[in-house]
Amino acid sequence: MTLAELSETTGISSSTLSRLEAGKRAPNLELVVPIARALRLELDDIVPRAAPSPLVARTTKRVGEIQFETLSPESSPVQTYKVTFPANPAGVAAVPEPNVHEGHEWLYVLSGHLRLVLGEQDVTLGPGEAAEFDTRIPHWLSATGAGPVEMLSIFSKEGKRIHLRARPSTPD
View 1 (cartoon, rainbow, N blue to C red):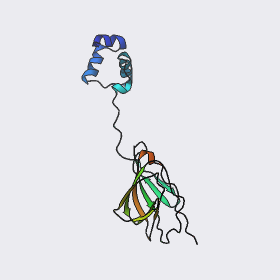
View 2 (view 1 turned 90 degrees about the vertical axis):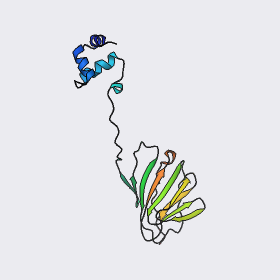
View 3 (view 1 turned 180 degrees about the vertical axis):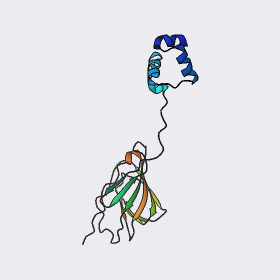
View 4 (view 1 turned 120 degrees about the vertical axis):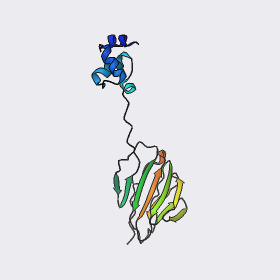
């Protein structure tokens, strides 16, 4: 389509179209909409979208005494959390009903000691240690010892359902 044809179709003068094309005039909706219609384009094809911010809007959620801080956007294919478990100096006499769901989980202990019950295994992870597992295997997590535990938790898309069970109370 020539400049003259576009001018005739849109009702916008050739000189205005020429200035727009050369970048000597700022476009506005009164100009862009008729041009898009004449060229059979969507506005998204003409007006570039701003790049999304790489910053994550961090939110914190408490479930019982456990704190979950989001470290990835909801739209991310993996969900990442910083999880803080309270101190558990007495330990837990019996493991409550473990979690089971689709997906994969990766844990990294930042501080404290984390108890991970995974199927028949019962292990303790310290700072700098990591674990990875299929979340279809029954699993349960808790702090063990006098201090709290801070850890990073990364879920695959299928395993993004966060553990929302608080630490069970210890028997008196």
